[in-house]
Length: 478
Ligand code: HEC
Image (tube, rainbow, N blue to C red; front, side, top):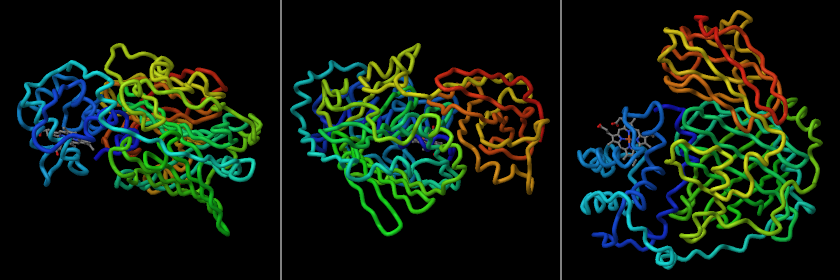
């Protein structure tokens, strides 16, 4: 199992809601309605398969990204076999709900329809009702504002994501405006996942909201959450944020602070398709506090001022023109070549806040010149607070590996496929970084003896800038 794909399972709720309407009333047995690739199969595949079977380096060496791909693997019987195989299921963490698996069968039986005669929107809307709950936001003029302050830090710890354990994980939360704090996980080839918290006016209250989402295999998603619960203990404080439209039954996150530790959990229901289930559980310690402190003094954080105004409510997402709106989630599905810019995707999804409206953040493009030795190797592209290599480029080691205290200063750690030689960090905190590109010679996803690096490099990223750096000396063997 490759660790680089797993974070995206959290983001992979992207498109299954498309089918909520139809599935809610689907009867066991045969499916009378037309089942097409575009309307029915592609959303399932995008939600359950392409975290692994897509991109530059797919699992099992095959992709399920086009009609032809899915057709081929369904026709040869292997796909139907594996999605129904209790012993050896696909996806690997368990069988999908029966009605989804049944759709594949019906699709095959009906002759693999590609583009369906899209059922009229009104008909779909009648298939299910969703009553949005009455969410009462916490008034941060009374309590809860301090959550923004508590969040500051480079949180280093361990993660459980969809039942998978990761011994090392980090979130670099830093202020980006007087009342806005942000962190991003960059996965590289497959995509990314960000979460930011900001002060707003929502439903007549001054409160805190979160914006969470990212880009996964060309699918753009952003979901909005609102603070609806605050609890205090003798030495801890807990904050719950729920889907700003569908409430806790759709999605929620909970953050518990105790001294310098943070527990960050999230639950999701696949847009109402299931009961909310644990999705993510992070536990970490605050480290390298000066990173957030410096950012705070640069942007005048924290102040109880509105960063983004939602007094008029949240706009209706594009998808909610055709389906019941269960969630404050803005989605744009890929499949278009060439892919539009991320700003354009946000506009098409009707995301009320887009990357071009985020304050203070920057981009950094790293280009790497590959040599014959590193031409077919994965690249680990690390941004860290402290240097990981000595000036000549060899690892600063202890017991044969990069020193643990130095690795703990990792702030962003995307991985590039064998075919890629450039990467752009988006939503990047401005500041100083050490950049270390590592050719992963033994393909273990980790800097280890034998891997190839380059002379030590430092980058300065200014606020609201697009910095560029190229590495042309990737030739230092460890
Ligand atoms: C978490 C990663 C992951 C997800 C998600 C996943 N797969 Fe796989 N899949 C793999 C890996 C790894 C293999 C190769 C090992 C094996 O066959 O078990 C594989 C193999 C397969 C094979 C066998 C190919 C062959 O010829 O032997 C099929 C078919 C398949 N997957 C279909 C699917 C479908 C359909 C989905 C979504 C419903 C899916 N997979 C979701 C990781 C994944």
